[in-house]
Length: 439
Image (cartoon, rainbow, N blue to C red; front, side):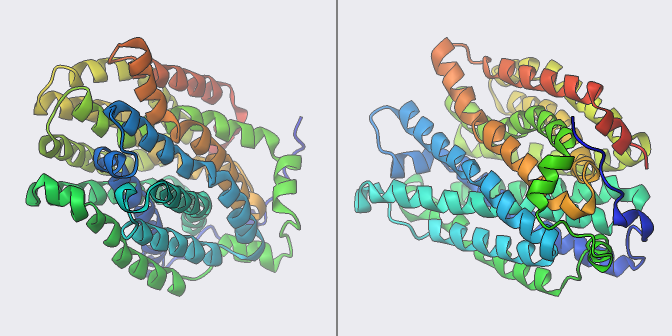
């Protein structure tokens, strides 16, 4: 049994500053790093058919894609490590330093992928270098989302934590839209031979402007007011990770349970669906990418809507809605996509985006509220890092493997349904979720 959490110092200070401009600057600065994170996420997923042939040449196209998706999962392996390193730094010394360092690592490694030699020039060294880059990105991402979402929630007025927190996933999704849009423009504007030769490098190199802007903004932000209250009251945990697992095990396990459905659903719709509609459904590259851009753009708007709804009706109500739809919608969604053509591909993705956006709107504030400020970045980051590594990183690989093993093109739906059912049970049973819903 976990011990009761000690009173949090933040309850004795205002929840957020009153300056609208200050709050806006904080939101933009925190969101830039998330956008860069998922910009790379989206371009890597969108370019999977190209990268698979350039770095993992094989006579079997499916084997090459599986190798690339396995490398995609490798990027998630280091997330828990990054969460431990950056979470401890954030809880001991403040949110600003890890936010700056994480965006620097992400940006540099994204650009480095853009200049890496391919297999025909470097042999086995090429996929090894790509693997190292993905590991470094996983390290930085592990410290990014939990710290930035905590930072946003700690700047929010108490009655708007859901909306402020939803900007963490909103900015991530916006990065996905930008990445997919860049790949779409290049696919339309370049002959396939040029795209396969050097054009695929352009989206990675374009990560540099995001890096520069993000570093500048994060250098100028002020520290989180809740962390300042903890520091002023000398309430910082000497060992945040030890304190987390000694005093907040139940909240940590609750977070992991919520992550299961969210991670599988979000990774499937953001990283697997494009490959699915191109290789399984047979939609050409340009219309396939167009459907992804349109569906993800709708998802961006829905994230903020569900963040606001979580402030009005509570985190638990929105999470129950999201989990129920994750159970019910994957099968009909893939059936619709399987009809073939632009319209069904778009409609099928829009169906899946509803539960993903609902999760994305509610979980940043929920996960932050599960832990007191003195261990918040560690609790949020480590729990989310493990959940992402285990379930999000492997979801595209598992989905592809299920199709190969069963011969059933809608078999990935059952994996999402099972994950949603687990999360629904956790949300309904968890007293921590009920308490976090009370503002």
